[in-house]
Length: 445
Image 1 (tube, rainbow, N blue to C red):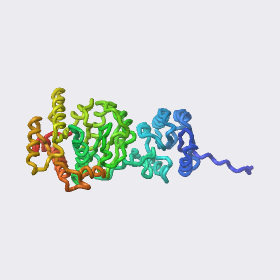
Image 2 (cartoon, helix red, strand yellow; image 1 turned 120 degrees about the horizontal axis):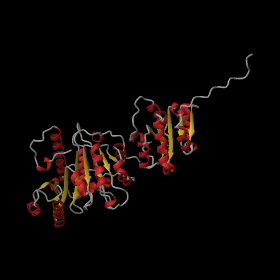
Image 3 (cartoon, helix red, strand yellow; image 1 turned 45 degrees about the vertical axis):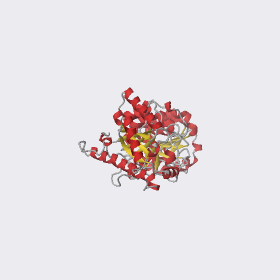
Image 4 (cartoon, rainbow, N blue to C red; image 1 turned 180 degrees about the vertical axis):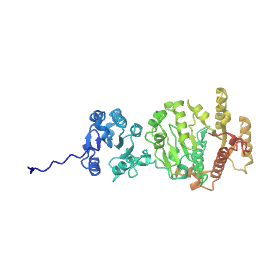
């Protein structure tokens, strides 16, 4: 005898779960999960997820979605445990985050997240993330995935982007580090560093090296000002965690100028110069060198506990000197310090900045007299670009963009070309090729 009762439908098998403090806080995620999986998903809080992921039923899932916001930062270790347990169960993990700081986000990515979607979820963001993790070899999340409509998770305007320009790509050869320091305030180290980095990033349209400039002026660094970039809000946190950071995390801390030049800005706050030590600075330069062909370091005017680290890791340490007694005295003190400490003084390349014009014979005589008194040779004499240099700096652009005919612009371009020619010869194995200047005889990498 047949029953008149309607057959009870079999429940749809569980294919995924969301894990959050309270899924009702992520209403857009609920809608997208229902659109993607129908009734084939469930919701767990973090404690329930840790218990569930130890069970055999968890291995039958396709993926989990971990949803967090700024209120979850105090329990970040628990969230990390959930991600790691999911990876132990061989599940794919999609991270959905809102308002997390860069370091917190970085820790969650390193814990094993396979993909990322910002919250509020952009249209089709979850669908695309699910499609990516279903591919045989899902791509690791990149900085581009961590942007939503030009804004970062903390609400600030995004400055780091997926490299598109030639100078923003991966490494193409041996890396080199060039540091720039002033003998005295106003001797132009930042102007030289910014424009040297920009010229190197535009040196060759077909084989442009990837270039990063690092502003180690932790108190009053102005590289970001010269390029009209916002100072990184989390620079101090990045420096504090730099020894455990990977390349992806480092790239996410960078700002980008004109898709060609990567910039590690000075922090927002005025920090003591000893807030970081030689170990942190060494790790920072090592990481930058692993990511870029050329690293330009803008040094503070002061000598710090990590000046020795930068000097030893640099291929060339440019020391900018002005044609005045103050700069000459400081240059002599710096020279004596290096000699007394047994530091590699051969790496120091002296630059005469704001020099008189070529037709000023008295000025040329003064330059020669200063070189003799210091027992040095100026490897480059950079002319005084005049008021135009200050005006261009105030407009936050490289000199070659707004003052291409300025005498200082041309000399910095010549300096950059010499450095690039040296890199090219060394990469080609022509280590015995004649060099135009002793400055370019150093071995990079």
